[in-house]
Length: 284
Ligand SMILES: [Fe+2]
Image (cartoon, rainbow, N blue to C red; front, side):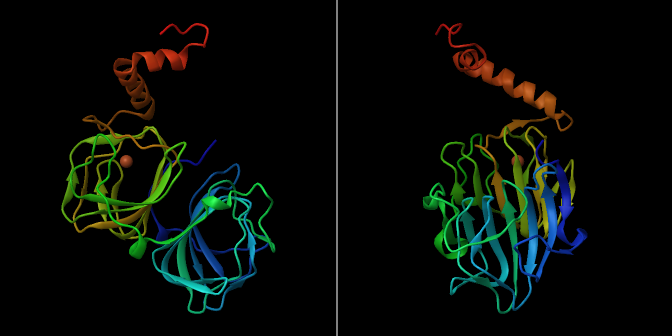
C-alpha cells in the first residue's frame, strides 16, 4: 500500500506522544510525520530527554537517524548536530544515552520502530558493510546536483547514502535565498523532505516553514516554487530521481505517469519494447 501523500505538514502541528513500544526505554517523545498504515514504516521527529538510556541492541527494520540538536552517546562515543547514521536491518549498536537531551529525525524504512536488546547483530545475514556513521557538516562536501534535467542554479546537495542498485538516496540540500523555479516537476520516485531550517513556497501546497515536511509519492506535480530566505533540509528518495519538467500545474499523477511513458517510448523505443514484450516476442 505504501505511505499516503503528506503535504504540507509542520512538526509543531503534530501531536507529541511518548514512545511506549516494547524494547524501548521511557523518555522518547515522538511526532509521526508519515507512516505506512500496513507495516508501520515511518518517519518521526523525536526528542530523547536528558538522562535517557537505552540498552545495546538492534532494530529489525532498516533505520536512519539524523541529529537535529543536542547530543547522543553510543557505545561511549558522543555525536552531535548533523550526525547521520544508517543502520541496516538487524545491525547491533552499543548502549545509547544522552546527558543533555537530543532532538533527531529518524526513519524506520521496513516497519514500525522496534528494538531488540542484543549483544551481537541479528544474524550472519546482516550487511554490516552498509553501516554509515558520518557528520554531515564536517565530513561531507556540498556539490551541485547532477540530476538531469537540472533544477535552477542555487541548489546544493550532500549525499549521505546512496543505494547502488536503485539509486535511492538520503541527502541534505540547501536552497539559496531568492531561489525560484518557474516550471512544474514530478518524479518516478517517492520524495520526502524535512526543513531543518528555512522556508519555501509552492503553488499547489503553499508555505513550508522550519519543521515543514512532505512525503510525496511518485508523479505528483509540484511547482512553480520559490524560497525567499533560504532552506536547509534532509531529503530522501526510494529510487533514482529524474526531473520531469513541464508547464501544467494541474495534471494529476496518472496523467503524469502516462506522459512519462510516452516520453520514454519516444526517446528509447527499444527499451520500451523490451520492457513490455516477453523475451520471445522481442526482436531488436
Ligand atoms: Fe521534486
